[in-house]
Amino acid sequence: MAVKFSKRAVEADVLVVGGGIAGLMAAISAAEGGARVVLADKSNVLYSGSGGGGNDHFMCYIPEVHGPDIDPVIADFQRGQQGGLRPRIFIETWMRRSYEIVKLWDAWGIPMKFNGKYEFAGHGFPGDILIHLHYAGKDQKKIMTREAKKRGVEILNRTMCFDLLHAGGVVAGAIGINTQQDEAVVVRAKAVILSTGSVMRLFPASTPGRMFNTRLSPTCVGDGRAMAYRAGAELASIEIPMMRCGPKYMAKAGKATWAGVLRDPAGKPVGPFVD
Image (cartoon, rainbow, N blue to C red; front, side, top):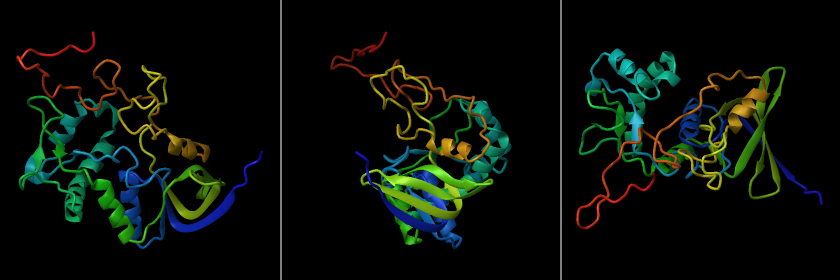
């Protein structure tokens, strides 16, 4: 039996595919520049993406904390766990722009300070320059969604874009489907921003029966990269997989340091839980 789809057509200056932290920030920025912005997310922007449940740290450089010279900060990062995965131009651009984002988020109502001060802690070894700012990001997606709507961004929740409209090297929008209704959605746009997050579940897992045993959102599956590639974009660094260390058979973000020791009422350590 054939399924009949209704068709919905949407016009925009800028289409943002993916409503995570990056997608919402891109949509907000484009709208502030005067563009008519449509944001499509296959879930709901209030909770979608790897930041959907909130976050507690932010990699940044704050001159009043780290000093006026950014070079030692970048050099320290390059010696760390992710240093070999990022070119310097990426790291420096991120770092130099990070403080303005910290101040912006704080102004929106995302608490970026602890007891009135910026708190840098963890995510490093003794002697390292600490570059991860700890903040209270539980409601960050709700706040960013509010700011996007305030600027007139049209949000299409439950709309999964799966291919770009393109011809002759020019991208003119995207086509998707509503994940809850038999509806095809065609968005025509002058520019498209793909912000579909990291790529999870690309390789067979060590726990095949637990598909969502991933360190980031399991719904981030590389669909944006695939769309870009089919439209003729060049992909960089895809030969470098993401590797993390941690407890056996458990997806773990960070450096796998233990927060503490679990003890029984007599003070005896409980475990180990794996061999």
